[in-house]
Image 1: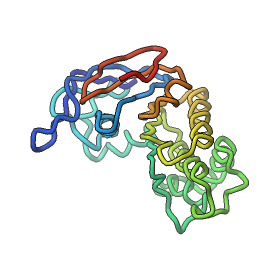
Image 2: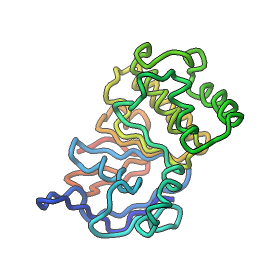
Image 3: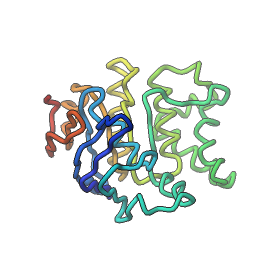
Length: 226
């Protein structure tokens, strides 16, 4: 589904974020992308979303070279990929329901579809009874559940989660990790970027380890070792 071929990314000032990286992620896999801050995890995710372009190499999504996708077609690629971030990125003046539904409204989904899909997604993330609350009324874990629901609402094939538990305590961290596992079990590919070794060792999923922009380890049943 996702394939990196000899990818390097060098920023101005000769800052090397990624160096000659190659790997493949299959459909329905759960992959942990690990490494210390600055290892290149976020850059790698931005490349998948086509928010950044590689300096060299090729990236494929479902067999299509991302670099060859025309600018006007990039929104269609990004609808196939849901993204979740550490800082939630919720709209403070909208309720839980409105924050999630907004992702469908902007692509012109009909009201009947939004109503139907919202019932399902709120149930998946366990927020049915919080639908009318505003972000300020939610815990950190609940805010992240809203962010995950928003990423899921357009039924993406892949979820990219960039340090989604970075602002959470242990209880809410495990809560979010279990939700990502549930999403994966429902058939969505999950790529989780984290520097939290407890998460990685809890999951025991395939782990790609980055250090100084290079892949130093790729293990099927990984652990966080640097």
